[in-house]
Length: 451
Image 1 (cartoon, rainbow, N blue to C red):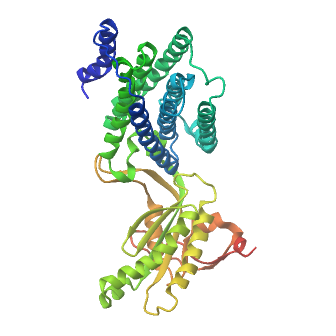
Image 2: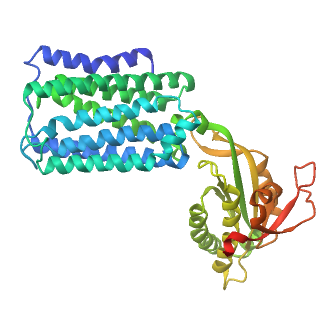
Image 3: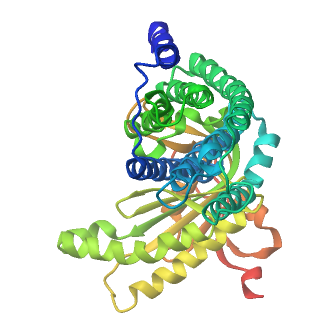
Protein backbone atom coordinates (compact mmCIF):
# COMPACT_ATOMS: atom_id res chain seq x y z
CA UNK A 1 0.00 0.00 0.00
CA UNK A 2 1.40 3.36 -0.99
CA UNK A 3 1.93 6.25 1.40
CA UNK A 4 -0.89 8.23 -0.24
CA UNK A 5 -3.35 5.42 0.36
CA UNK A 6 -2.25 5.21 3.98
CA UNK A 7 -2.88 8.92 4.36
CA UNK A 8 -6.36 8.68 2.85
CA UNK A 9 -7.37 5.76 5.02
CA UNK A 10 -6.00 7.44 8.15
CA UNK A 11 -7.30 10.93 7.58
CA UNK A 12 -10.63 10.36 5.78
CA UNK A 13 -12.64 9.00 8.76
CA UNK A 14 -11.46 11.77 11.07
CA UNK A 15 -12.09 14.39 8.38
CA UNK A 16 -15.61 13.03 7.90
CA UNK A 17 -16.21 13.23 11.65
CA UNK A 18 -14.99 16.84 11.73
CA UNK A 19 -17.27 17.80 8.83
CA UNK A 20 -20.31 16.18 10.43
CA UNK A 21 -19.66 17.75 13.81
CA UNK A 22 -18.96 21.14 12.25
CA UNK A 23 -22.10 21.03 10.10
CA UNK A 24 -24.88 19.65 12.30
CA UNK A 25 -27.29 19.90 9.40
CA UNK A 26 -25.35 17.14 7.67
CA UNK A 27 -25.23 14.97 10.77
CA UNK A 28 -28.74 13.65 10.41
CA UNK A 29 -30.42 11.23 12.78
CA UNK A 30 -31.17 7.58 12.08
CA UNK A 31 -32.50 5.83 15.17
CA UNK A 32 -33.57 2.27 14.44
CA UNK A 33 -33.03 0.11 17.49
CA UNK A 34 -33.97 -3.34 16.04
CA UNK A 35 -31.77 -2.73 12.97
CA UNK A 36 -28.89 -1.70 15.22
CA UNK A 37 -29.37 -4.80 17.37
CA UNK A 38 -29.29 -7.33 14.56
CA UNK A 39 -26.67 -5.67 12.36
CA UNK A 40 -24.19 -5.10 15.16
CA UNK A 41 -24.78 -8.50 16.77
CA UNK A 42 -24.25 -10.24 13.43
CA UNK A 43 -21.02 -8.34 12.80
CA UNK A 44 -19.79 -9.19 16.30
CA UNK A 45 -20.44 -12.91 15.84
CA UNK A 46 -18.59 -12.99 12.52
CA UNK A 47 -15.66 -11.07 14.00
CA UNK A 48 -15.54 -13.37 17.03
CA UNK A 49 -15.33 -16.37 14.70
CA UNK A 50 -12.44 -14.66 12.90
CA UNK A 51 -10.61 -14.10 16.18
CA UNK A 52 -11.13 -17.71 17.24
CA UNK A 53 -9.75 -18.99 13.92
CA UNK A 54 -6.60 -16.89 14.44
CA UNK A 55 -6.36 -18.22 18.00
CA UNK A 56 -6.58 -21.82 16.78
CA UNK A 57 -3.78 -21.25 14.26
CA UNK A 58 -1.67 -19.48 16.89
CA UNK A 59 -1.92 -22.30 19.41
CA UNK A 60 -1.25 -24.93 16.73
CA UNK A 61 1.94 -23.12 15.74
CA UNK A 62 2.75 -22.08 19.32
CA UNK A 63 3.10 -18.47 18.15
CA UNK A 64 2.61 -15.80 20.81
CA UNK A 65 2.17 -12.86 18.42
CA UNK A 66 -0.77 -14.29 16.51
CA UNK A 67 -2.32 -15.45 19.77
CA UNK A 68 -2.25 -11.89 21.15
CA UNK A 69 -3.70 -10.58 17.87
CA UNK A 70 -6.50 -13.11 18.15
CA UNK A 71 -7.28 -11.90 21.68
CA UNK A 72 -7.47 -8.32 20.41
CA UNK A 73 -10.09 -9.26 17.82
CA UNK A 74 -11.98 -11.63 20.09
CA UNK A 75 -12.37 -9.14 22.93
CA UNK A 76 -13.25 -6.17 20.69
CA UNK A 77 -15.84 -8.26 18.84
CA UNK A 78 -17.27 -9.72 22.05
CA UNK A 79 -17.82 -6.31 23.64
CA UNK A 80 -19.29 -5.05 20.37
CA UNK A 81 -21.78 -7.89 20.76
CA UNK A 82 -22.49 -6.77 24.34
CA UNK A 83 -23.13 -3.27 22.99
CA UNK A 84 -25.68 -4.81 20.61
CA UNK A 85 -27.38 -6.79 23.40
CA UNK A 86 -27.73 -3.60 25.45
CA UNK A 87 -29.52 -1.72 22.64
CA UNK A 88 -32.28 0.25 24.39
CA UNK A 89 -35.81 -0.87 23.62
CA UNK A 90 -34.88 -4.37 22.40
CA UNK A 91 -33.91 -6.40 25.47
CA UNK A 92 -33.28 -3.55 27.91
CA UNK A 93 -34.19 0.00 28.69
CA UNK A 94 -31.63 2.84 28.65
CA UNK A 95 -28.47 1.60 30.37
CA UNK A 96 -24.79 2.38 30.87
CA UNK A 97 -23.72 -0.89 29.27
CA UNK A 98 -24.89 0.37 25.88
CA UNK A 99 -22.52 3.32 26.15
CA UNK A 100 -19.47 1.71 27.76
CA UNK A 101 -19.27 -1.85 26.40
CA UNK A 102 -17.57 -1.00 23.11
CA UNK A 103 -14.99 1.55 24.35
CA UNK A 104 -14.11 -0.72 27.28
CA UNK A 105 -13.67 -3.70 24.95
CA UNK A 106 -11.63 -1.66 22.50
CA UNK A 107 -9.35 -0.47 25.29
CA UNK A 108 -8.74 -4.03 26.45
CA UNK A 109 -8.16 -5.14 22.86
CA UNK A 110 -5.71 -2.28 22.41
CA UNK A 111 -3.59 -3.63 25.23
CA UNK A 112 -3.35 -7.01 23.48
CA UNK A 113 -2.65 -5.33 20.14
CA UNK A 114 0.19 -3.27 21.63
CA UNK A 115 1.68 -6.37 23.25
CA UNK A 116 1.48 -8.23 19.93
CA UNK A 117 3.50 -5.51 18.19
CA UNK A 118 6.51 -6.14 20.44
CA UNK A 119 9.32 -8.50 19.46
CA UNK A 120 8.81 -11.27 21.98
CA UNK A 121 11.85 -13.42 22.68
CA UNK A 122 11.57 -17.10 23.45
CA UNK A 123 11.12 -16.69 27.20
CA UNK A 124 8.43 -14.00 27.00
CA UNK A 125 6.64 -15.78 24.17
CA UNK A 126 6.67 -18.95 26.26
CA UNK A 127 5.08 -17.12 29.18
CA UNK A 128 2.31 -15.79 26.92
CA UNK A 129 1.59 -19.22 25.51
CA UNK A 130 1.75 -20.79 28.95
CA UNK A 131 -0.98 -18.41 30.07
CA UNK A 132 -3.10 -18.90 26.93
CA UNK A 133 -5.78 -21.07 28.50
CA UNK A 134 -5.99 -18.87 31.58
CA UNK A 135 -6.32 -15.72 29.44
CA UNK A 136 -9.13 -17.24 27.39
CA UNK A 137 -10.97 -18.35 30.54
CA UNK A 138 -10.55 -14.94 32.20
CA UNK A 139 -11.75 -13.09 29.11
CA UNK A 140 -14.68 -15.45 28.75
CA UNK A 141 -15.62 -14.92 32.40
CA UNK A 142 -15.34 -11.14 31.98
CA UNK A 143 -17.63 -11.14 28.93
CA UNK A 144 -20.17 -13.42 30.63
CA UNK A 145 -20.12 -11.32 33.81
CA UNK A 146 -20.63 -8.11 31.85
CA UNK A 147 -23.50 -9.74 29.93
CA UNK A 148 -25.20 -10.95 33.12
CA UNK A 149 -24.85 -7.59 34.88
CA UNK A 150 -26.07 -5.73 31.80
CA UNK A 151 -29.01 -8.02 30.91
CA UNK A 152 -30.10 -8.31 34.54
CA UNK A 153 -29.90 -4.50 34.79
CA UNK A 154 -27.68 -4.62 37.85
CA UNK A 155 -25.48 -1.76 39.13
CA UNK A 156 -23.35 -0.14 37.82
CA UNK A 157 -24.77 -0.81 34.33
CA UNK A 158 -28.45 -0.39 35.18
CA UNK A 159 -28.91 3.34 34.59
CA UNK A 160 -27.69 5.54 31.73
CA UNK A 161 -24.81 7.86 32.51
CA UNK A 162 -25.26 11.61 32.67
CA UNK A 163 -23.78 13.45 29.69
CA UNK A 164 -20.83 14.83 31.65
CA UNK A 165 -20.04 11.40 33.13
CA UNK A 166 -20.30 9.74 29.71
CA UNK A 167 -18.08 12.33 28.06
CA UNK A 168 -15.45 11.93 30.77
CA UNK A 169 -15.38 8.15 30.56
CA UNK A 170 -15.27 8.09 26.78
CA UNK A 171 -12.52 10.69 26.52
CA UNK A 172 -10.31 8.84 29.01
CA UNK A 173 -10.87 5.49 27.30
CA UNK A 174 -10.29 7.04 23.87
CA UNK A 175 -7.02 8.69 24.89
CA UNK A 176 -5.56 5.50 26.31
CA UNK A 177 -6.94 3.37 23.50
CA UNK A 178 -5.57 5.58 20.73
CA UNK A 179 -2.13 5.44 22.35
CA UNK A 180 -2.23 1.63 22.52
CA UNK A 181 -3.48 1.19 18.95
CA UNK A 182 -0.98 3.76 17.73
CA UNK A 183 1.82 1.72 19.28
CA UNK A 184 0.42 -1.45 17.72
CA UNK A 185 0.03 0.08 14.25
CA UNK A 186 3.54 1.53 14.36
CA UNK A 187 5.01 -1.82 15.39
CA UNK A 188 3.27 -3.73 12.61
CA UNK A 189 4.13 -1.07 10.04
CA UNK A 190 7.80 -1.53 10.97
CA UNK A 191 7.36 -5.31 10.64
CA UNK A 192 5.81 -4.78 7.21
CA UNK A 193 8.79 -2.71 6.07
CA UNK A 194 11.06 -5.57 7.10
CA UNK A 195 9.00 -8.43 5.64
CA UNK A 196 7.02 -6.72 2.84
CA UNK A 197 3.97 -8.87 3.61
CA UNK A 198 0.55 -7.43 2.79
CA UNK A 199 -1.09 -9.27 5.68
CA UNK A 200 1.14 -7.44 8.16
CA UNK A 201 0.19 -4.13 6.59
CA UNK A 202 -3.49 -5.10 6.76
CA UNK A 203 -3.18 -5.74 10.50
CA UNK A 204 -1.51 -2.35 11.00
CA UNK A 205 -4.32 -0.69 9.08
CA UNK A 206 -6.97 -2.60 11.04
CA UNK A 207 -5.54 -1.25 14.28
CA UNK A 208 -5.58 2.29 12.84
CA UNK A 209 -9.28 1.84 12.08
CA UNK A 210 -9.97 0.64 15.62
CA UNK A 211 -8.10 3.65 17.03
CA UNK A 212 -10.23 5.96 14.89
CA UNK A 213 -13.39 4.23 16.06
CA UNK A 214 -12.47 5.17 19.64
CA UNK A 215 -12.07 8.80 18.61
CA UNK A 216 -15.48 8.76 16.94
CA UNK A 217 -17.09 7.14 20.00
CA UNK A 218 -15.72 9.92 22.20
CA UNK A 219 -17.09 12.80 20.08
CA UNK A 220 -20.15 11.57 18.18
CA UNK A 221 -23.74 11.91 19.38
CA UNK A 222 -25.83 8.76 19.70
CA UNK A 223 -27.96 7.77 16.72
CA UNK A 224 -26.50 10.47 14.47
CA UNK A 225 -24.72 9.71 11.20
CA UNK A 226 -21.41 10.44 12.91
CA UNK A 227 -22.27 7.88 15.62
CA UNK A 228 -22.82 5.14 13.05
CA UNK A 229 -19.37 5.86 11.65
CA UNK A 230 -17.55 4.03 14.45
CA UNK A 231 -19.68 0.93 13.81
CA UNK A 232 -18.53 1.01 10.19
CA UNK A 233 -14.90 1.53 11.19
CA UNK A 234 -14.94 -1.54 13.43
CA UNK A 235 -16.68 -3.59 10.78
CA UNK A 236 -14.14 -2.42 8.19
CA UNK A 237 -11.24 -3.54 10.40
CA UNK A 238 -12.75 -7.02 10.80
CA UNK A 239 -13.60 -7.36 7.10
CA UNK A 240 -10.13 -6.21 6.09
CA UNK A 241 -8.46 -9.00 8.05
CA UNK A 242 -10.99 -11.57 6.84
CA UNK A 243 -10.55 -10.49 3.19
CA UNK A 244 -6.75 -10.59 3.28
CA UNK A 245 -6.73 -13.89 5.21
CA UNK A 246 -9.03 -15.45 2.63
CA UNK A 247 -6.50 -14.69 -0.09
CA UNK A 248 -3.65 -16.40 1.81
CA UNK A 249 -2.71 -20.06 1.45
CA UNK A 250 -5.16 -21.96 3.69
CA UNK A 251 -2.61 -24.18 5.45
CA UNK A 252 -0.64 -21.23 6.83
CA UNK A 253 -3.09 -18.39 6.49
CA UNK A 254 -1.53 -16.27 9.24
CA UNK A 255 2.14 -17.11 8.69
CA UNK A 256 3.04 -13.52 7.73
CA UNK A 257 2.40 -12.54 11.36
CA UNK A 258 4.49 -15.25 13.03
CA UNK A 259 7.38 -14.36 15.28
CA UNK A 260 10.84 -14.80 13.78
CA UNK A 261 11.42 -17.84 16.01
CA UNK A 262 8.29 -19.49 14.61
CA UNK A 263 9.18 -18.69 11.03
CA UNK A 264 12.68 -20.10 11.23
CA UNK A 265 14.73 -21.67 13.95
CA UNK A 266 16.53 -24.75 15.18
CA UNK A 267 14.42 -27.40 16.89
CA UNK A 268 15.11 -30.73 18.53
CA UNK A 269 12.46 -33.06 17.13
CA UNK A 270 11.66 -36.64 16.32
CA UNK A 271 10.37 -37.50 12.86
CA UNK A 272 8.27 -40.59 12.14
CA UNK A 273 7.82 -42.02 8.67
CA UNK A 274 5.37 -44.84 7.97
CA UNK A 275 4.87 -46.53 4.63
CA UNK A 276 2.92 -49.56 3.43
CA UNK A 277 5.15 -52.39 2.17
CA UNK A 278 3.68 -53.93 -0.98
CA UNK A 279 1.38 -50.98 -1.66
CA UNK A 280 2.30 -50.80 -5.36
CA UNK A 281 1.47 -54.46 -5.90
CA UNK A 282 -1.80 -54.03 -4.02
CA UNK A 283 -2.86 -51.08 -6.18
CA UNK A 284 -1.99 -53.06 -9.31
CA UNK A 285 -4.32 -55.90 -8.36
CA UNK A 286 -7.25 -53.93 -6.93
CA UNK A 287 -9.71 -51.31 -8.14
CA UNK A 288 -9.02 -47.71 -7.08
CA UNK A 289 -12.12 -47.77 -4.87
CA UNK A 290 -10.74 -50.73 -2.93
CA UNK A 291 -7.36 -49.03 -2.52
CA UNK A 292 -9.05 -45.88 -1.20
CA UNK A 293 -11.18 -47.94 1.21
CA UNK A 294 -8.05 -49.67 2.55
CA UNK A 295 -6.18 -46.40 3.06
CA UNK A 296 -9.16 -44.73 4.73
CA UNK A 297 -9.64 -47.68 7.05
CA UNK A 298 -6.05 -47.27 8.23
CA UNK A 299 -5.98 -43.48 8.40
CA UNK A 300 -9.31 -43.08 10.18
CA UNK A 301 -7.85 -44.98 13.12
CA UNK A 302 -4.19 -43.98 12.93
CA UNK A 303 -4.24 -40.23 12.36
CA UNK A 304 -6.27 -39.37 15.50
CA UNK A 305 -3.96 -41.63 17.53
CA UNK A 306 -0.82 -39.95 16.20
CA UNK A 307 -2.23 -36.48 16.89
CA UNK A 308 -3.36 -37.40 20.39
CA UNK A 309 0.17 -38.68 21.05
CA UNK A 310 1.51 -35.18 20.40
CA UNK A 311 2.51 -35.57 16.77
CA UNK A 312 1.81 -33.21 13.90
CA UNK A 313 0.75 -35.14 10.81
CA UNK A 314 2.83 -33.10 8.42
CA UNK A 315 1.91 -34.84 5.21
CA UNK A 316 0.15 -37.83 3.70
CA UNK A 317 1.41 -38.86 0.28
CA UNK A 318 -0.51 -41.89 -0.90
CA UNK A 319 0.44 -44.61 1.56
CA UNK A 320 3.18 -42.62 3.30
CA UNK A 321 2.78 -40.71 6.56
CA UNK A 322 5.22 -38.12 7.92
CA UNK A 323 4.64 -37.11 11.54
CA UNK A 324 6.73 -34.63 13.56
CA UNK A 325 7.02 -34.63 17.34
CA UNK A 326 8.25 -31.56 19.20
CA UNK A 327 8.24 -29.01 16.37
CA UNK A 328 5.88 -26.48 17.90
CA UNK A 329 5.45 -27.59 21.50
CA UNK A 330 9.21 -27.75 22.26
CA UNK A 331 8.77 -30.86 24.42
CA UNK A 332 11.74 -32.63 25.96
CA UNK A 333 10.34 -36.16 25.56
CA UNK A 334 9.64 -35.98 21.82
CA UNK A 335 11.66 -39.16 21.20
CA UNK A 336 9.57 -41.15 23.68
CA UNK A 337 6.34 -39.79 22.24
CA UNK A 338 7.39 -40.66 18.70
CA UNK A 339 8.59 -44.15 19.65
CA UNK A 340 5.46 -44.90 21.62
CA UNK A 341 3.28 -43.60 18.76
CA UNK A 342 5.17 -45.85 16.31
CA UNK A 343 4.46 -48.94 18.41
CA UNK A 344 0.81 -47.97 18.82
CA UNK A 345 0.57 -47.37 15.08
CA UNK A 346 1.76 -50.88 14.31
CA UNK A 347 -0.49 -52.44 16.95
CA UNK A 348 -3.62 -50.62 15.77
CA UNK A 349 -2.81 -51.12 12.10
CA UNK A 350 -2.62 -54.86 12.75
CA UNK A 351 -6.11 -54.80 14.25
CA UNK A 352 -7.48 -52.78 11.34
CA UNK A 353 -6.01 -55.24 8.81
CA UNK A 354 -7.33 -58.31 10.65
CA UNK A 355 -9.44 -60.32 8.22
CA UNK A 356 -7.75 -58.73 5.20
CA UNK A 357 -4.84 -61.02 4.49
CA UNK A 358 -3.96 -59.25 1.25
CA UNK A 359 -3.69 -55.76 2.78
CA UNK A 360 -0.16 -54.32 2.91
CA UNK A 361 1.38 -53.65 6.33
CA UNK A 362 3.36 -50.68 7.59
CA UNK A 363 7.08 -50.21 8.05
CA UNK A 364 7.98 -47.38 10.44
CA UNK A 365 11.19 -45.41 10.92
CA UNK A 366 11.89 -42.85 13.67
CA UNK A 367 14.87 -40.47 13.86
CA UNK A 368 15.64 -37.76 16.42
CA UNK A 369 17.87 -34.70 16.22
CA UNK A 370 18.09 -31.06 15.23
CA UNK A 371 16.22 -29.64 12.26
CA UNK A 372 15.47 -26.22 10.82
CA UNK A 373 11.79 -25.48 11.40
CA UNK A 374 10.13 -22.76 9.38
CA UNK A 375 8.09 -21.79 6.36
CA UNK A 376 8.81 -23.77 3.20
CA UNK A 377 7.24 -22.87 -0.12
CA UNK A 378 6.34 -19.88 -2.24
CA UNK A 379 5.98 -16.37 -0.85
CA UNK A 380 2.39 -16.52 -2.05
CA UNK A 381 0.48 -19.68 -2.74
CA UNK A 382 1.33 -23.13 -1.47
CA UNK A 383 3.49 -23.16 1.62
CA UNK A 384 3.84 -25.15 4.82
CA UNK A 385 5.47 -24.77 8.17
CA UNK A 386 7.86 -27.67 7.85
CA UNK A 387 11.19 -29.06 8.96
CA UNK A 388 14.38 -29.47 6.94
CA UNK A 389 17.49 -31.40 7.85
CA UNK A 390 19.32 -34.70 7.82
CA UNK A 391 17.00 -36.09 10.51
CA UNK A 392 14.08 -36.02 8.06
CA UNK A 393 16.04 -37.91 5.40
CA UNK A 394 17.32 -40.44 7.92
CA UNK A 395 13.81 -41.19 9.20
CA UNK A 396 12.68 -41.87 5.64
CA UNK A 397 15.66 -44.18 5.01
CA UNK A 398 15.07 -46.06 8.27
CA UNK A 399 11.45 -46.59 7.32
CA UNK A 400 12.53 -48.16 4.03
CA UNK A 401 14.88 -50.51 5.91
CA UNK A 402 12.47 -51.40 8.73
CA UNK A 403 10.95 -54.87 8.97
CA UNK A 404 7.35 -55.13 7.81
CA UNK A 405 5.16 -54.58 10.85
CA UNK A 406 8.14 -53.28 12.83
CA UNK A 407 9.74 -50.03 13.99
CA UNK A 408 13.33 -48.99 13.29
CA UNK A 409 14.83 -46.14 15.33
CA UNK A 410 18.02 -44.14 14.87
CA UNK A 411 20.93 -44.14 17.32
CA UNK A 412 19.99 -40.65 18.54
CA UNK A 413 16.43 -41.75 19.21
CA UNK A 414 17.62 -44.88 21.00
CA UNK A 415 19.97 -42.90 23.25
CA UNK A 416 17.18 -40.41 24.05
CA UNK A 417 14.92 -43.29 25.07
CA UNK A 418 17.57 -44.70 27.38
CA UNK A 419 16.72 -47.75 29.49
CA UNK A 420 13.04 -47.48 28.66
CA UNK A 421 13.64 -48.97 25.22
CA UNK A 422 13.91 -52.70 24.59
CA UNK A 423 15.58 -53.05 21.21
CA UNK A 424 17.32 -55.45 18.86
CA UNK A 425 20.51 -53.89 17.43
CA UNK A 426 21.09 -54.31 13.72
CA UNK A 427 24.38 -54.35 11.83
CA UNK A 428 25.32 -50.88 10.60
CA UNK A 429 23.10 -50.00 7.65
CA UNK A 430 24.19 -48.65 4.32
CA UNK A 431 21.50 -46.16 3.34
CA UNK A 432 21.09 -44.04 0.25
CA UNK A 433 22.73 -40.62 0.48
CA UNK A 434 24.90 -41.45 3.53
CA UNK A 435 28.65 -41.75 3.14
CA UNK A 436 29.02 -43.78 6.32
CA UNK A 437 26.91 -46.67 7.64
CA UNK A 438 24.34 -45.70 10.26
CA UNK A 439 23.41 -47.45 13.47
CA UNK A 440 19.80 -48.57 13.80
CA UNK A 441 17.71 -50.54 16.28
CA UNK A 442 14.50 -52.49 15.94
CA UNK A 443 12.25 -51.17 18.72
CA UNK A 444 10.48 -54.06 20.42
CA UNK A 445 8.73 -52.31 23.28
CA UNK A 446 8.96 -49.51 25.83
CA UNK A 447 9.27 -50.48 29.46
CA UNK A 448 7.07 -47.63 30.65
CA UNK A 449 4.24 -48.99 28.54
CA UNK A 450 4.16 -52.16 30.58
CA UNK A 451 3.78 -50.46 33.96
